[in-house]
Length: 123
Image (tube, rainbow, N blue to C red; front, top):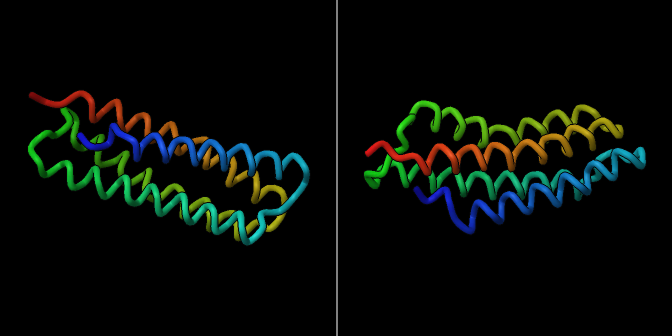
């Protein structure tokens, strides 16, 4: 599956860097800025590209052994960033930064889980 590659690594690294930034801002009692919110949208776009590549990979014949679970993780991974963005916009305090930080910590876990499921193909 094409989920295991440089795009996944780039997504994980970007999410972890943003998580550190957002958690630092939350610790300093700072609300998310417009730049922070745009960074979240860029990360969401990177995740959307990763999900699109994974969906295309489903049609090349190498399906994971548990396709429904894989699809569930794809949907969750795709929706996680935009939901965090929306919640952070609703909470314009340091808690908004914390929401973004926690979301950026969860995204690498979701991507790693996608990699695990994709590596076990049903042959």
